[in-house]
Image 1 (cartoon, rainbow, N blue to C red):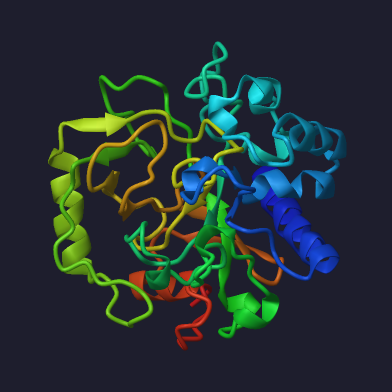
Image 2: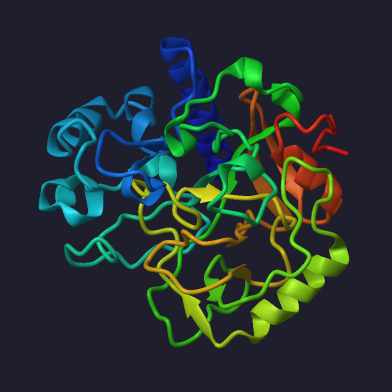
Length: 309
């Protein structure tokens, strides 16, 4: 129930942000530090004033030089980086083992991610049409308007859950985990905005390859400041609590800025909490039809299918 309340609070905060700014916050807030979204600040960072965290947002704005500095490489953001926000943590999820001051370890944890749709493709914005990866020449900096959710806000996923890692790259966590296998090959990888989404057969092939991959990342769910998959973003390629591990095409740093499958996951029995574009919260079964879940991730592909089906 507390997790559902958290998702509701975040979904309403996004709508309050939209009422104040006439757009939802961009996937990554950037102000001159580069063109790659991994250098920016997450959509959650801009929600702080709308979840009773205005002082923290004010400090972040100051310490980041109005979101100009590259947050994890700048010592000025260390304190904010390490500050825990209860709205970003599910009580049922394992806790990230926060330690030290390094950006890879000192995060306070984050168990929620905004949706960028049902595409494994990370580096091509034109293939993504979730609520938080706008198809625009402005790429990650682009902010989405409600009018661009043409499938209807009640049919479009805004955010859902994921799990924190254990900071141990030696062994994949047992049971349900959002830790990411690295090195999986994605053959026949269809992408938005076509309707040729990955089939069950393709997903099973990818999942088996990922499961066999020897390496994995264990730093997922550490930072609410980071705008990347496994930190504050996810996709709807595979169904919730997928039986295979999350997977990316090759190695990366502490976050998964690579093509991959980053599905919603939780420790709740049978599914995940999902915040929809209209601000409502649904419990989505892990047995949901895969195509239905993929379509729910898209805001404008023309397939108006409720995730309750």
